[in-house]
Length: 289
Image (tube, rainbow, N blue to C red):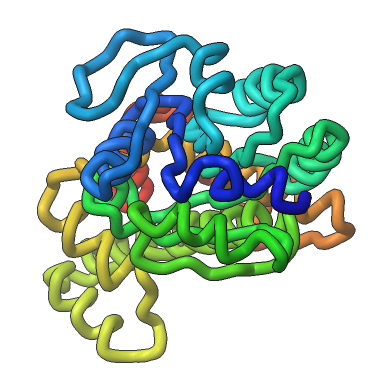
């Protein structure tokens, strides 16, 4: 992709962006882009809430008018539908996939679009709906070096931190590893609370002790105090998505010839929790159902 795929080369520096998928994450990202002064189109089959500054259009209109397409979709099936539609567009587009997908599928999709001079990069995010709305997401970026500056400029209104992990597919790999570790830490924190009850130790005291030592994790430092001990359970990330991410991470590891009894046990625990509480409950319910 030379200048013809860099929308700045034909737009005088003003790049229109379409956000495909206006759920909790996508709507927050769209709002952050509007706040940064970007021209934003929104695509979602569900009417949903009105978003100030976002012009709702069908997918075909978005692909015709927007130089950059940001995907915030439930999974690979929905992403593939959009990729197939982008492939039919004659003018090169830049597709930034913030969804969580199999990295092997992501590389294949990038090759599919490259035949039409389109660029696909993977930029899965962490930070939840609040991070999306505040423009403070953490991004795991898989992107060719020659397009890094442009893609980072497009992501700037959305993020607090961008880690360029490597080529296309590396971002999704990093996101899956991150969520797998988070899922494992959640399972471990469940034991922490069960031990505190059995030992008759106030859970907040035991959490404080662990957080002052080497057993601490992001889950014990943030999730447990904020969403578990407070009994709020409103992080915005549901059990169904975490169970899916853990299962996908284990599947990708298996495909790479990597096996882990710890990861396998976490996969089983998340599947059990999914059966127990359903897909919509907050994922912090792993610690305290």
